[in-house]
Length: 324
Image 1 (cartoon, one colour):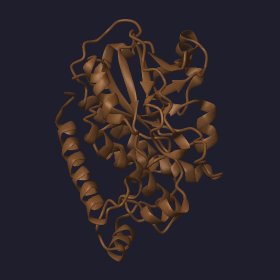
Image 2 (cartoon, rainbow, N blue to C red):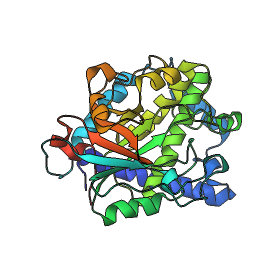
Image 3 (tube, helix red, strand yellow):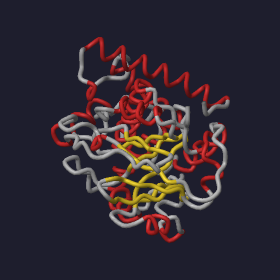
Image 4 (cartoon, rainbow, N blue to C red):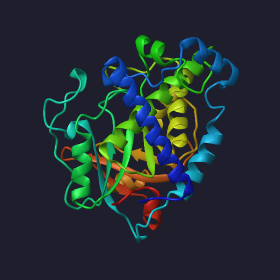
């Protein structure tokens, strides 16, 4: 198991989060998408955030989050032997679930699973937007483990609708008197929701990749600073839970959603329907998304998402993947 003192602390926090969310769901029989994460009275909760919440604009904490993510990555290195050269892998999520599963807007497609040559799999936690779980996550995790492949996780971040914002605007460590703080709290709760999904599915990973791109049917706002606040809240929740973080996107998509916001964390770079060579080319400095290290390049072919490690990454695979 990827470990270290920080990882053990993180696991304890994950278990406490899971118990809190599970208890809340059972108390009010809410659907998973709307599960509250605290029973604290609203008035007391608001006062706590006014007293202790974070001030400022999105990006104020980005440097601290990047430093925390780096420290956690150093502590969470596993025992996967170093490799020379490139390592081929894949990513999967709700589109690979059996047909007809998931939310109405994102029905699963039964797309093919990774090719036999894949040595790692990055598994998606959401069914599109935040607060919607991958409907076959546990089965996909089991599929990876049965083949003794390396595994990690990613999750889509998304902008809340009015009801979701109202539900979670005070539910977190940020100051809910400002819109940025309210949106950070929503992002924070999106990540906590995904942490519980991982625990319930038995998915162990040293890192969670935050997927930042347009989400059809669940559009981001026109305010890039507001969008960045959601991403920043999610980043804080994952790092507090003991995970290192990275981002998945392209420079164009990232800019379209969050503008010049930077976390400075590692990057998983998409190349689209191209080739392995083009995916490797995305590892270059000219394809930087937000100033982080290039870790993976992704390309799409034959109805599959293929991935390859960037130069030098295979020397430290335990930083990026878990293997049972």
